[in-house]
Image (cartoon, rainbow, N blue to C red; front, side):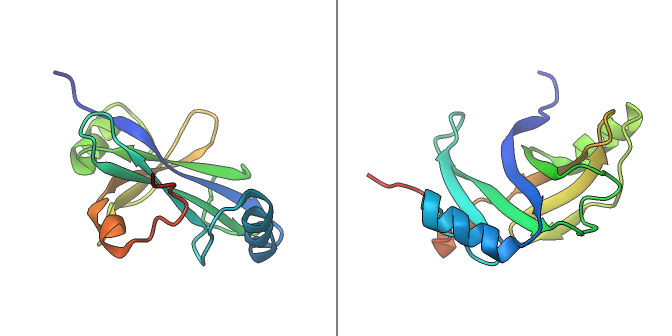
Length: 141
């Protein structure tokens, strides 16, 4: 079996002039429960039937977090075994922008695609979100 790479979308991040006002708009008009990070959505992973999470967030338009990309968005992809994947990507000539950073909710690294889009790769620890009850945008039957 070949090495697993991307297993799904982990997050969608947008630049905007006023992040707080934008989050309020999404909460008021689309019913998204937002906090300082944005909104978190839970889904069931088909391969394991375990919950997974997708983060939606907004950043100030002058953020440097998306650099070196000049784009107004950044996509975060969920992956398996980030360390091994980064080694493979480097061997394939993909530009890896930073070192893997590790938090209680997962490991992260950033790469650039051929169009100059900054991509965030995330090896998640979904249990952290489930245990905290953070996924308020999830509809439970």
